[in-house]
Length: 543
Image (tube, rainbow, N blue to C red):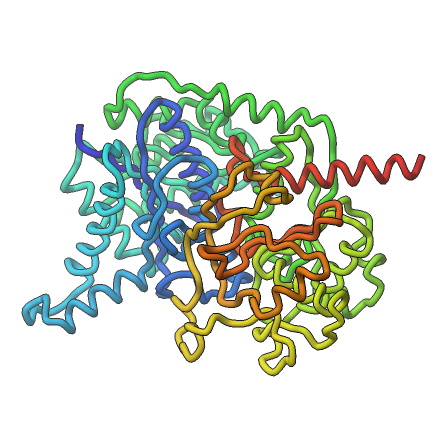
């Protein structure tokens, strides 16, 4: 059977949740035994989101092979088992960069280089490359970033039009649109959807299914109207209403409406029934927790809801594993320093997590949070920058190195306990100068890290430029710090912990990138367990 392709576009407004929808469709297809791959095509001119401000773009998701990608790949990972690599995300910047380099080499033999066919051909090449990441891929789901009508998206839309023209029996188009409810008029309006589909059809793309984002389920009358004016079968108009609970309910909602069955029929994928037993059991646990804890996140990008998306989801997964609801409270680290009293600013949580980030803004506030947790015996989890915060605080307070710092924050510090790798010094381009992707880590026995993982060798994903300075390792160890995880030959510190603390652990990598609701990351599970124990202890003290 030839590989099949599903193209997902968005209309009317941005932020409709195309990534979540695409991942949900992928999850439903996998539940039927269909092997999938997923691709995100982004219309921005940045080569990748690696140098983009998290306030603009949200989280940068990192794959095993070191690609800095769109955050929607995090959805793909959490919902599916699609291979994720550099072949899973392509931007306009990458496409144009490739075409221009070929032109400079003379690959086009003096021809005039144009959007059609040269740019569109490169886009089609990327789609095919995604389908060949692994053997036996049955379906490739391709999400087109942006909104229909945007100038930036036109080359991608033209490319998928051509792709379907060349493979008419192997492709379908799913259009995700917005159907607003006007409160003043008391009416649901279909006109924006009609216009969005009209824009698609002018390009030469006719949607096979229309998914309607809406506040509440649409009436049969509204669906019939969309069917008539958008020229799709009535059963192919499906609502995707706002969900009050968890995003993990989306696949079940789409399945109940028969979306996956229609996709299988349209692409001749067979009639094997979906097996959603594990997913349903997970949702039941999520909806019927036995306990509840509060986790404080002390970071610098918390005003953007997607900047730490994978961290928030991984905390949820850890809670699912322990039948516990995790309430997250967000604390901007910069405000801790401005307002003084740490207890007053961030108190009242059962545990705290300091996530990754770059730059000096909010740095001292994070250090105060780490000291608060260390001295009060409150569970602390430091990720990437959060581990470096933990190390600097320990150096200042315990090793009595009052000017200890990271050279990222203070290049002239007398005690650079965190510093840039020597091979990265002198590099000018920000992109590509970091330790990116999956690296092995050896874990020492009889440590909190080993208790969490239950094995000696792990693989975790990295995204950082600065490392712990091994010149200070002996001093740290003499005061009780344990470096429980190390890169090959003990050259770089990957995990640090304080054994005489209830649970204070930092990791240089990003474990949140490898957590799923059905298989929570072991460190997040252990962190939630520590928070539950802290809650129990505080309750017993109050008694």
